[in-house]
Length: 272
View (cartoon, rainbow, N blue to C red):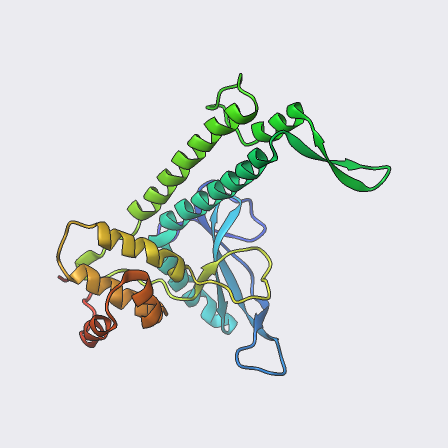
């Protein structure tokens, strides 16, 4: 257990339930080469620190530096992600529910038809099979869904539940955001990115970009008119690597206002 409150394990150990940190040993990383016309990748050395929820990786920080620097870098990265861990977990759950909603919508559009693979012809053909279609829908059900419904009726009930659960997960993500204590927000730099398994050939997405709309939503929905909450959002976004143009698009805050806020020093944590 670290000072952040998140348990820490090394890769190869069994993942405990709930939120925790998993860290790799010191090894090579193949990372995208910036501004290079001759090399798509470069080789660095360091460790990776993952935020996990049970067996599921939610976020990753790749810490490129020499071996002796790793304990300090890991401690700093863990302290940085800890205030955002609950929000990230709720967001990941909302995305999983959205995937289930999409899968269910696709099934309901099939209207009783299923794809059947023929081993003889090695072809997939479309066949009407209400029982098989209902079984595919039922795979998206839980014990809370009626067991006596079939087809569209069952799908409609599941749709309502998934919509409700997804909305609850999104609300929980906003509710779990760290408070703007003293008019400042804890940092969340580009060190922490979405974890998507093996590194893909496109640019990774920092978690700060993902949680920005939630912070904007909380600010817009707040009954508190104190401007320091807006100012905390501006200072946090720019310090987290979000461009002023993107902040303007996400929040509607005028660019002249953003510039004016940035001219003032961000408040120290714990001070109004």
